[in-house]
Length: 331
Image 1 (cartoon, rainbow, N blue to C red):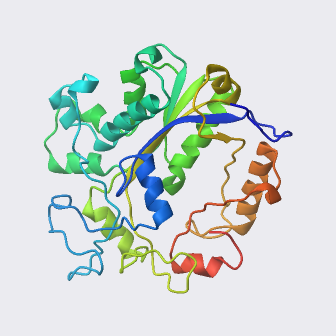
Image 2: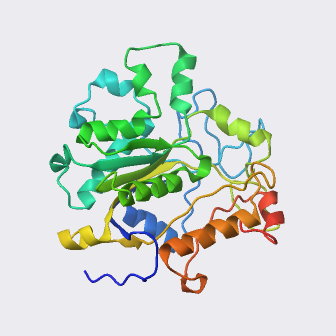
């Protein structure tokens, strides 16, 4: 391919050469894109058997006991071909399903990049995963049925380490938890790892499952969840957000190396940046100054101007705080 990359950026351009996903209503990227372009809603009710201490109820309203039941859920969270990955059934039983799904997504992304997984053994590929939930681990300890495989199987660190282990990759292997920005922070860390020469390429993923009813109930206590199962972002009707789950994985490689090797290139990442609001407002409230600063930093790293940006995707809380802050700050 011929790459037309803006000049003047401070960062090495990095290509996305493979991808995979498992989102509500979409088991692969093509299906997810179709849902986005068609405006299909993937919000539904709690799958039968997911929250075993109460039955699933319709997602359109709050349940009769006042609990929110709407959410974006994926199918088959407990399905896993352990034999394919050389993992015993007993060990797989005590693995966080987030680790199992991420392992499958990593394999699918490598295949999508037209890379032979067998050739990755001993490679300097890194694995960077955004993951913030410990539902399976909490449930495992609460049940009291401890097993020798439970310690590592329920460890969040092993979500990334398991991929590195199975594929034999020797680059950095890290789980990043920055809350709802975890997968994007993992991407930023992977870009740094490639640019610093810590790894030649990277698998970057994000994974999240809503396995415990109590976590949803806890969020509802502070008013974060929409009782009608809809997210009215930046709207006067904003009354909370809808919890979702799923996972995705991309393969990153320096653009010049991807072009040299004839890899499929989905897109090019020119720059990224992270920061924090520095305590200017509440822990969950956005800061206009901090947002302006991180966007400016990202533009400088990429060598682009604000006028060059044609599409913006953002995190909209769908809460009244988001509505109140929209006049002074991007949420």
